[in-house]
Image 1 (cartoon, one colour):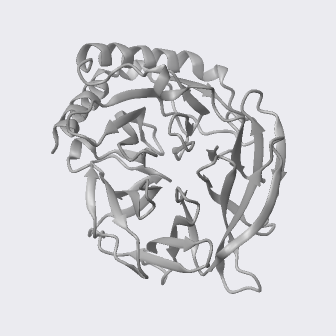
Image 2: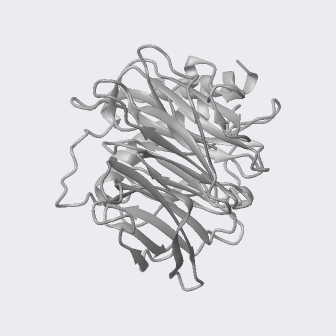
Length: 392
């Protein structure tokens, strides 16, 4: 365990031990007919946040530096963001939430969006749709590219070269290489009933349509393996991905009670494919750092932005940890990790983290959608609605 890992373990543990049951809101199933409003969460969120603030200040002041404005904002966030919703894709103004464009399922009327990723200039996007394969034949995943105009309209929507993946179910992790030449995504190849699906990372070369697949080498007996996030090294020669092992999965994206295991790994993806296991482990060798649900390499390659869960498990049907922490962890031994945001998890299933090309502006999509501004979550519509991932 590195010195940075040990200090982060100590701080996360201190936060978890300081959370009291009475400060946490009860978990309730979301009503599909009435989206949950932001105001109903303000009181319990404020209560839990106050406890976390006290614990962090007393027990972990030596570890976390206060978020600095010059690191997370200069001229303001991007003007538009793209939201994946049940009806397809919507483009919205960051300042007002007004919808400027809608794309209704180019993957077919029964398809759905699994992932969104932005290119290096924050105007080029790739969307991942999963649905029935054309002309029958099971499932298929399609990748479409498009760009935003200065008015927030969608232009140039088209299937990318090599972007039809027959027989593959899309995962939620998707990333565009810094030079825009490649896309990496997680896919599943269904196997026989009663056996686990084959998890893979697919790399598609957008100029030629060539593909490579990486799988195997990370399976552990008795555990379910998932890869919930992918990012690229600055040079685009390697992917950085989070691998998680759960004994049980109570909600999509959440391990059941017990000690999950997680590693942030790097993998060089040159060639025709291979196993996932070659490469190195960047973070997560200790059990204290195991409950990481998202991890992205910053665009400069110097740090990891991680989302970790801690605190007591709550909920009768789907118990999940109740405290969410977003931290920036430097890869250098002498760097200091910084706590960027903390909040109460609530009943939302999955957590997604995305960043703009500069790494200054982070979006969290969970029970609340928003971007991180000076340690606060600035809400982005829709709140409590159907959006499950955002990008800008």
